[in-house]
Length: 230
Image (tube, rainbow, N blue to C red; front, top):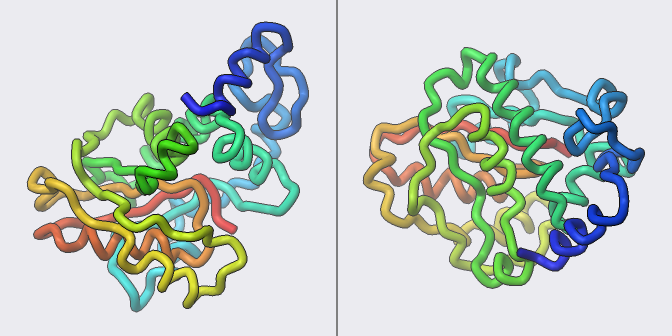
């Protein structure tokens, strides 16, 4: 357990739960995000849109079956606050809730109907030890509460600790991650349709690196879903 999660758990003993999007105290029936924020979140509807903006990021680079982002990322907006709390403050509750919303959306979309495995974008082991958790895996854990897809024991591994992608251009992002991922034992994935999950997509470079590694598996198909798109 990371120190951020420990602090959140300790605070809940003495303070009311607060909305991860606006910091308002939560009602008993509310999970991580208050109802007014849930109703006002900038949902993209991309799970129902072929050739959407996220899918076009991969055109001419790698083949994806379908791709979508649940929310639009706006600086200083609700989506940014939720993802910041998930990634840097150990707020697993909001990550699980985002994962459930992702599953709810994708299960209603024929474009994702044949997905049979789900996989989180991995962190490098050193960064995982420092943070204490992988935010993308938290999303997958919430996703599987509503849609219990299979999760391979050994899928992708991050073998290079990359520098942060923030403030990098498209080419810098790609060179930063192009050889960062390797495959573990993926025999169970041959012929499968894998859903790759991450928190945010900007240029798509990190996900492209993951997809290139995955597509070495015979007859594998890959789809993508992120919690947000910048």
